[in-house]
Length: 272
Ligand code: 1GP
Image (cartoon, rainbow, N blue to C red; front, top):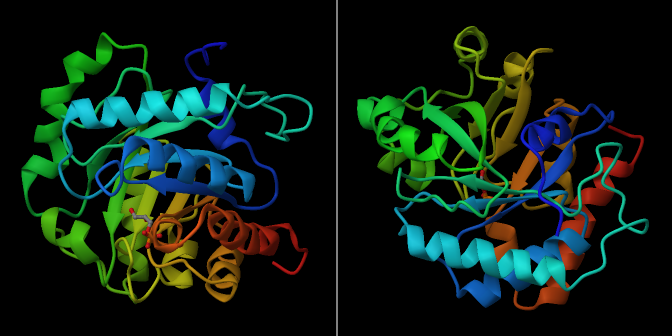
């Protein structure tokens, strides 16, 4: 399999195609590595164009490694080519991107890692310390680093608790713009706004609009599970929308594909 050369994942993610795209989030801790691979493939069949591997709880490196390898093997068995539309930046397959909960959650076989700081954490461990532990290790790996500011908004869920975030309120519009500017100023080319996995309320569209900048790729996630919510979030203009809990709550792989399809179809429609 061709290796994605450095910078390819970022180019792919930053590409403007006039609509948001979907990232499938797979938590290596929630199922076996084989089940993770099946879920990833089913989500891609439904129209997900990239895979995040991670979760809000600490996962051992060996578990992340095994999950990444098994997903890669599953992709290898598929024929990727003319029939798969991955837009102008041609990748052999959807990129596998680590969404690490801690410095341990690394696999050198992934294509890229969100090298991120939880900007509104009250604990410096999540702002800078975990990153400090991982940084020299990462420099030695052939893993593209995607500099990312990470912000947790209300209700915040488990990641808000674990990350000890000073949750951003749904009406803190100016504060969100300031965070986006801060991240850009620090050279973070990605901003990930998160309401928490399985959140009862998704990130408010006003906050998404406030975070939107031309010089940053905007990722939004948490609580997005119906076409109606998808439409509302997508209309606010993020570049990528992360779907996790919905995938894990399905009872069959066919259902995963159908559910993701029902969300990606919203993005194809001209009504956004
Ligand atoms: C969590 O934003 C992601 O980090 C996805 O959230 O699990 O609610 O889809 P859900």
